[in-house]
Amino acid sequence: MEFRTDLSYTKSHEWVKLEEDTATIGITDYAQDALGDLVFVNLPEEGDEVEAEAVFADVESVKAVSDIYSPVTGVVSEVNEELLDSPEMINESAYDAWFIRVDNVTDHTEFMTAEEYEAYVENEQE
Amino acid sequence: MLIYEKSRQGRGSSLLPACDVPDHPLPEKDLRAEAPGLPQVSEVDLSRHYTELAHKAHGVNDGFYPLGSCTMKYNPRINEKTAALPGFTGVHPLQPESTVQGCLQVLKETGEALSAITGMEAFTFQPAAGAHGEFTGLLLIMAYHQANGQTQRTKIIVPDSAHGTNPASAVMAGMSVINVDSDESGCVDVAKLRELCESEEGQEIAGLMLTNPNTAGLFDPNILEITRIIHDCGGQVYYDGANLNAVMGIARPADMGFDCVHLNLHKTFSTPHGGGGPGAGPVGCRAHLAPFLPGKTVEEKDGVLTLAKPAQSLGEMKDFYGNFLVAVKALTYIKTLGAEGILSASQNAVLNANYMMAKLRDLYDIAFDTKVCMHEFVMDLSRLLKETGVSAMDIAKGLLDHGIHPPTMYFPLTVHEALMVEPTETESRETLDWAIGVLRDLHQLAHTDPEALHQAPVTTPVRRLDEVGAARHPVLRYTREEA
Image (tube, rainbow over all chains, first blue to last red; front, side, top):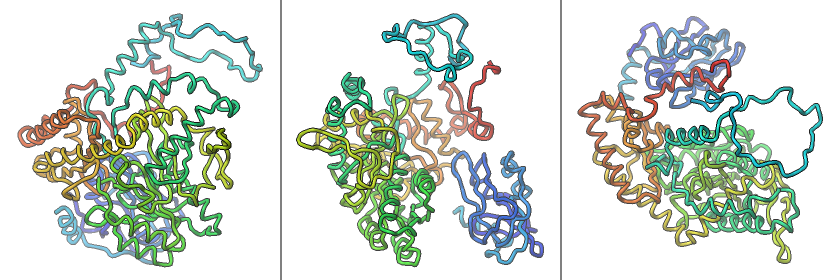
């Protein structure tokens, strides 16, 4: 299980890279492992507004469909459309397979560091 | 091999009788330019083709089929016999009512029997399946709120243990879904529900959808309080009848406080699930919703049956009267069993599930372990996976090698590594003992030779299927070029 120290993490298992008021968002290695092989991704469109703690995307595995929550409030500036055709990229490398980039970030949920998130995940697995 | 691949130009069968009515030519514009590419095979090859397919499939007639929440009970032959009676098969939906009194009688009596079992006042037979019934029931609730000027009521509450069709049907009906978590016992979190309904949002709530017993096989002990909370905030309560098989003759949805219900005749009332024929998801409701029912309902006037459209009907959910012959089969089942038989069907369904659970719980963890379950129970294989690397999927595949159809897997979503077992009342104690033995052996095998289970199944016509590949790159139709 990989935890990158240059990223922030949420309780709902998204990772965020926040640089000034731009955020890059994806799901964690733990999340992709728990979901299993992903077969479909539903992403927002450029210009959509996202809100911290609200659903912005969903992913489908062979087992189930799961909502993905936005860690920040802002406007979607870029969407990783490659994921639409190749959702397996998320399973292969969760931290490279970013979902969206968000500009004008005005708010965000509570973040954890890699170390805190690792402890949180361990606790959740108990 | 597809029948199209077996086709050879010029072969044929004489299965169709000669035409005994005059030709009636269609207008030129409606004719196709070239003949359709239908397969051409001899009768013996056609017969062998379907026998071969039957050998590759698994149905209730082949073996144990404990698919949770699907109620794969045996479908008695007599149902097929009555549904094939010429008085039922040789009718047209538009012929005069006076010439189809028997068919109307079937709809009337089936509605009355289902009303007796559920406590509802009126039924429509238009919905063709469970989810279609959900959609119909939700439109009924919306029509009711709109007629009362409560147009702001567009939100529906769905617990996290619900069947996936519930939120999907709600969205189709134009509602937005509010998810309510289960509490630690696997039932509705009453405190959270009350908080939501008593908040400002309560005025926007159209209702609640609930399966009771729920998908974890538990009868919600707070059901009366739950339905009262919804009614107090002005909402309606919808009963998903998927698990009715546990409570027939014991508890009625209307008495629990539900306002409308769909039933799956192809589950609870022993009609086939697809394949052998269409399903039926009739919707029943209490008197205040009845004026909004779709289609036409049967009424009796001076000893003559007639069809009438309810006063504020929401329209048509399907052409004519739904899958009528499914109602014939369900009525046959109800009449064969009688009131006492219906009750003992539910009692035995619950007994069989408890028997299996009791004989397995020393090896398999039971989700939300209560002493007693209803007609199904959920095993949580997380511990087995951690200890041996053998997953719920591996055990399910192992069952295939023993001629058992796997239980429902990875559902409800509230349980990881779930296997949801519903034996139904039609299985004998010998069959249950044998299936219990197989599950116990597989548990043992998971510890001694986990690799064997990763390799399963080995006796089936195809080995483990590439589900991920099939979902990522679906091939949905045969094209001749590929042949």
